[in-house]
Image (cartoon, rainbow, N blue to C red; front, top):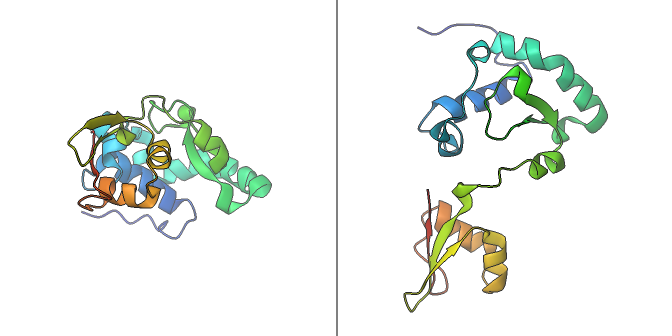
Amino acid sequence: MTTKHGLSRHELYPRWSTIKDRCLNPKDKDYERYGGRGIKICNRWLDVNNFIEDMYDSYLLHVEEFGKKQTSIDRIDVNGNYEPSNCKWATYAEQNKNKRADCRWREFEAIDSNGNKYFCNNQKQFAKDNNLSLYSLKQCLFHGKEGYKGWKFILIK
């Protein structure tokens, strides 16, 4: 049974929907980094009305200061759940500083043309150090590209 709430056009609806999918939908592209590692959306926020009630005023204040394009929901504790006490609005620059130290979803194994294996946790640095395109490396890790310049890459989950 589908619940009709009339809020699908509200400006916070897409943000709420993204959070919900990340935490609850195993088919979502980001599920492994959220729901798959135990990040939940609180019961109160399963209802979009409550999410809007809790976050809309602070959203408007953040938008007024930084603009809509620089307003993103951020978890204060990156290992904590999506809930009122752990969420705030932040700019993308602020959000980039609030990343978990053990960001395992970025760890990968690189195998050169001689079969030597390298454990890596920084895609950008690895690409730079080995004169590779970061874009192509990411195509191998995340989009099924077979290999690149003799290298093979395996994302460690």
